[in-house]
Length: 72
Image (cartoon, rainbow, N blue to C red):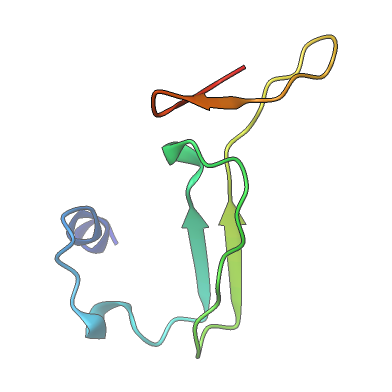
C-alpha cells in the first residue's frame, strides 16, 4: 500500500495498478476546496467526496477568495 501511495504522489501509477477498484475517496479539502461533487467512474460502486472544514465563531461569515487563498 505504501508503494502505491508513493507512486500516486509522484504521478507514476500505471492504469493496471488502479483499475478494478470498487470504492474511491476523492479528497480536495487539503487544497482549500470547501465542497464539490465527485464523479463516479465505472466500475466503481461508490465514491466519497471530502472537502475542507470551516470554523464558525459567533455570527455567520462567508469565506472569500483573495490572492489564491480563502479568507474569512
